[in-house]
Image (cartoon, rainbow, N blue to C red):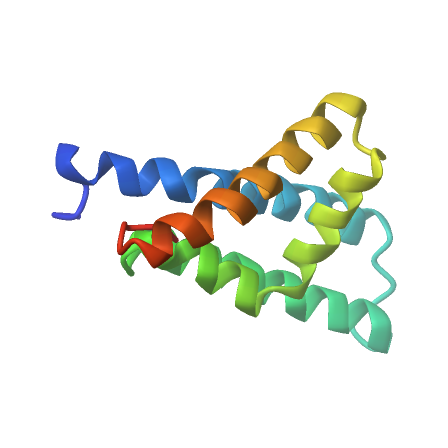
Length: 124
């Protein structure tokens, strides 16, 4: 936990949106899985459960163990349920406010990210 210093606050600010979406998405999918659990012998239910556990483990690793600068790349590249949840947010099923905030987040990351990265600025 020596990484948690004031010098690294900007890195945590950059990683905050994907970590927030991950925590909310994990909570949402856990509620769905518990409500509609059909047993471990149901292949579809087991597949979703395994992906959810994978997402939880990777989110915890990105917060507790690894450099938080790469948490956005790490989670977006490895977690299918994260993309399912972002799609749900964009579709407006969670509410108009969440839809607008998610679209703004993706637009800012999509525009500012490549510009900052190509100028050798830290960007996840």
